[in-house]
Amino acid sequence: MEYRRHLPHFQPEGAALFITFRFHGTLPLHSGRDGRAFVEADRELERTKQGPAWLRQPQIAECVTETILDGDRVRALYGLIAFVVMPNHVHLLIEPKAPAPKITQYVKGVSARRANELLQRTGQPFWQNESFDRWVRSRREKEKIIRYIEMNPVSANLASEPQLFRFSSAFTG
Image (tube, rainbow, N blue to C red; front, side, top):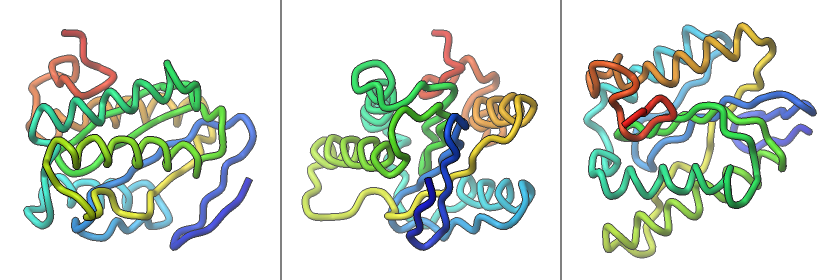
């Protein structure tokens, strides 16, 4: 399946998807043509002081984490492989069981509603409209993406080890 918003999106049948989305008001996410450009844009998201960082609040990060887990366990929209909820963005690696637009609409829509209620905000955007996604082309790439996602909090100095970061698939607490 192929669809387009500001970025092109392609969802091959049976392929895992690596999805990144961020808060409305944070710097633009430049996808680039290669992994290095994506990693640099992701590092910018970790370092930026621009825009909100609501996910630093445990109650808000937990709300987003629960929505991600529900998309897998309750809604069965995808098989969750790996995820991390960072201070201003989210990474997901999933095996889709529904079209990607339906998945991102669910995760972003439900988590935005819940988070805005907790923050006592109404009528304001929470997530950026666009998401970045990449289909996974090999088992090796999938393993590399899992490590990347789960090491993200360590790289950003949010945890000393992946399993200590509460809002991640690596968490073992």
